[in-house]
Length: 127
Image 1: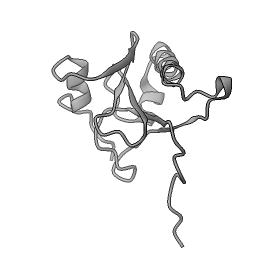
Image 2 (image 1 turned 180 degrees about the vertical axis):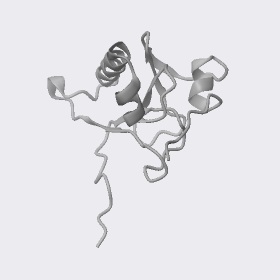
Image 3 (image 1 turned 45 degrees about the vertical axis):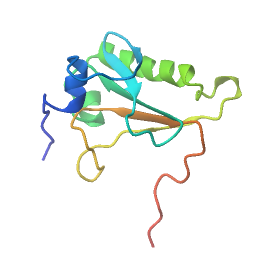
């Protein structure tokens, strides 16, 4: 069962200006801001301004302009935060959680960009 978009979610409220955020960058179709509970020295969320629940929803239903703007804003954030690979930087991790099995907490598509330290293994191995 697909997760329904809830326009009262915290990211929708941030986009409407009802809740402040620590903005990193913005363009016509996306917004990037610092996570309020950072898990790394760099922890920025990038969200589309449209009502998309998850990566698969965004990839299937967003316009080409929205997808391009979102992706370019991600690149801009990586550069401005000093985690991009160009120029010898050490890189980053990008995470998008989706649905209950992905432990998605907010039903608005968002990409976590984390960096500034080694992130460790992505998942614990199970025997």
